[in-house]
Length: 39
Length: 146
Image (tube, rainbow over all chains, first blue to last red):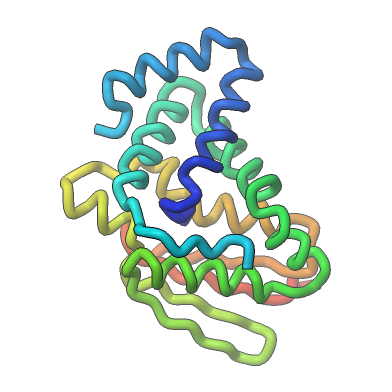
């Protein structure tokens, strides 16, 4: 389990991985997050 | 110890992480969230991995028990010689999601196994992760078998 305290560090890895695929992948993820990716 | 934050816990981050991993799996396949978890193990938990590579798994054990305790998990730790067995009777992340009726994504459930494998890759140790239920598992760290 990644502790909730390490959420920001995990997200840093997510952002880096998406950016490597192209900025549009990061933007698409942000859009999804804006629509509440967690629900 | 580097990884022992002491502030308030924010368990809702597990919900967002579950949603993010679900998005990554559905968009790119399981390999992408798995790869991000492996990178997290290598880069974020660099010092834990360094100790494991050097033959000392104690920082990993401290990490497990500190955060399970910090987040209100239920667990027992047993030592049998060089073998260390952590039985997680109630995982705080899974419990938080289950209490809210949020389906746990299959790739989210894999995070413990993927992290453990990445932390121990090419080291003298292996972690055997046995999944008991969605919210309980046993992870045993031991010297790698020849």
